[in-house]
Image (cartoon, rainbow, N blue to C red; front, top):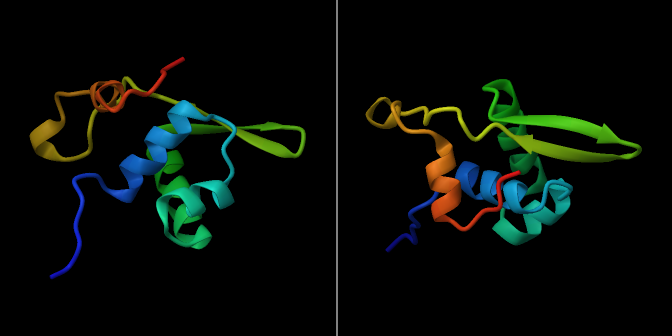
Length: 93
């Protein structure tokens, strides 16, 4: 039987970024257990939809979460992702 979880990799990346804004793609890959290429694709998805903003700080990248944006699925469009991140214990700045 295939293993499954309640959160998508997109949600995991977002939650880790909320708690560690300077986390690297390599660290995300290691923590989540998917390839760095997949992480970079997820980051691109989140950035293109406005959920995160990348900011360069020297050679490092920092991430700002736009938590007031709604979920993408039609059944949750009236709810912000802030609720999920808070439920996961994320520190929102």
